[in-house]
Image (cartoon, rainbow, N blue to C red; front, top):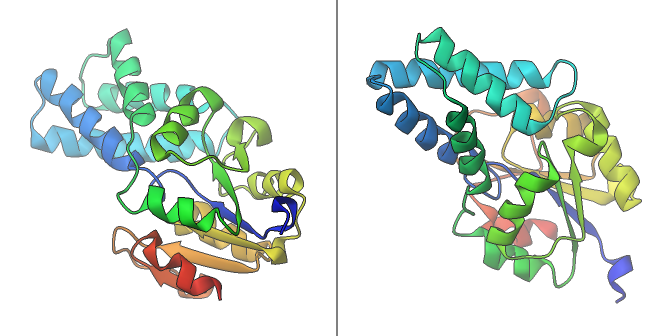
Length: 225
């Protein structure tokens, strides 16, 4: 079959394919401890960082790099810790260096044989390019927040994806870890199938029950029928 006729599988990238939150948290903890903070301070800074990251992404659009930098500055300031310009690069490097989960490269390579693969990510080209290289699989489409000028869970991100790949939502299977960023909006827009990769053992939302809940990507093939 011609590749242009293969069905689409669309993937969130961060925390679905690569260790985004883990890589950020490790870098943030190291920064806080280098500035004299203890474990309690690390936890406080982490909580503030995550809250600010989500809040900034719901406001006027700015690049992921700027979101990360502002979140870091606000979190350090809230803990009365100093911020240095090189701290910003440390955080960006952590995101660029987020490694794939062990199951990801082999599963994606196998799925690519008879599916087209797309990434839908709250990222920007000069960051996610590093993540894609580390995954080691060429995607048929990569749709980013910088193109849609909004962040998931905004429906605009998903509409940008559908426009790019030229597919009706009912013909697309979306695969992601986050209920907040992905599962709810994909259901609201009528995506044909939604697979929840619950890597962190979290509680889902019964109002948005996915078609399947999996621990990792290994079980995706079995769910495709």
